[in-house]
Length: 375
View 1 (cartoon, rainbow, N blue to C red):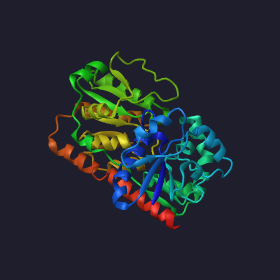
View 2: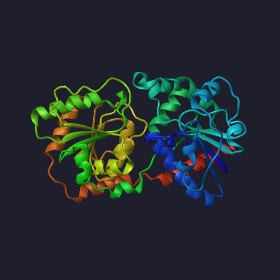
View 3: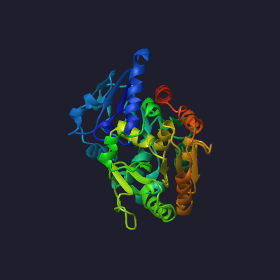
View 4: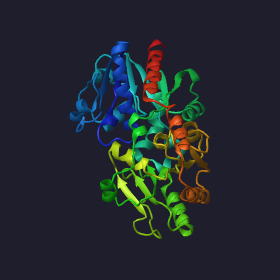
């Protein structure tokens, strides 16, 4: 097959979708020789277009002229022209990796819908994401196959858009091998970030959907009863929404690391007492899975998708009612008081994480391409 993917999320700092696209393209490229596929990527950007060849792994070609995403989305949101093949060249499959599928023309269209936050919690997303209320159903109509990262999102799609089950494919995300070998941060990184000896960690965009004000409220309650509790480290780029209120928290107890490269994030998670993930809505939940790969326990909201990822073994995760500040505080106090663990719980967590691989993601995705072409 000739396969072209929208790889725009590879340009610039990579958050969740960018890491998904990077891993998927890498694994498809590795498998392309054996499968006889031709894999190409196009980025809908002007300023970042020069970065595209370097962002693509071996075995994947860069195609297409510079094209601004805002303009193309505006046009393709109104009319089914021009077909994307005029930009990419001939292709059997066009995979829109980030919610929005252009008119596929003669190609079989595939779109990944990562979540329905634009419907479930519209006040917590950006104006660009709110436009998905129109663009996602349009993309679903254009698509031969719709991919989701979890069965929970697939269920939502079927319910919301009356989408037949045979047009949906769940493609769970994976874990990079480096997470299993991650070690706690070295003294230099600790010094640069001002890390305490013990800390809880959150990883993700600092955005309203992640329930960080709730986490800070719970942490205030923790410090009221355990002044020597681990610190709180927030890892991720600034998002949007109101600034976080740190009033009442002692200086230095909450540390913001900003965006960090993958190897530093791995070290920061590996050194944590627990990863805390109080999100109110999620399409998958990659940070909890990566924490398990480090052998680190998780404290997270009890959402269907989180159970799908981390399982129900209490050695892996403590799952709490979403939005319950008292339950979150109690769980953090319990983790603060936890005694040193032997190797058993960490091995159990890593065994859970090993159920999710990027190779499997790519294999299932390629099978969905074949189904799309045959429709």
